[in-house]
Image (tube, rainbow, N blue to C red):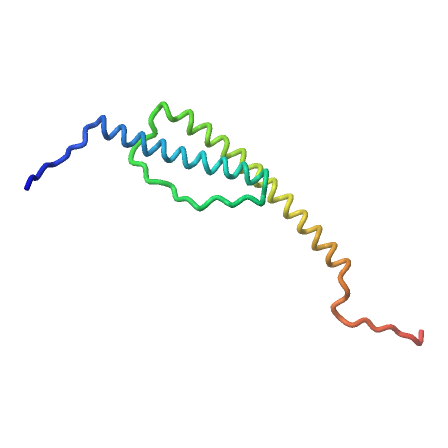
Length: 115
């Protein structure tokens, strides 16, 4: 039986960290794409919930520009979603007012026929 111990080299650790960051950015970008498509077609499936990965180390320098670009797209989608929710809220309030104005009264109404 051998007690071989594998020691991770700094290069291997850096490659592993880079792969983890690339995977996290891929998933963030996919979620942004799905949210953008959902804004265009609300009947599309909502993206599945996703938990932030634990990344042990800073983002590699050459991935920072991509991360910034994804963050900017997220902010734009956030603004559009907020606007859409506001619009939906206004439409819902209008529909409620119409429903209340056209609904038959819930209590009996009596007419004074002697008047």
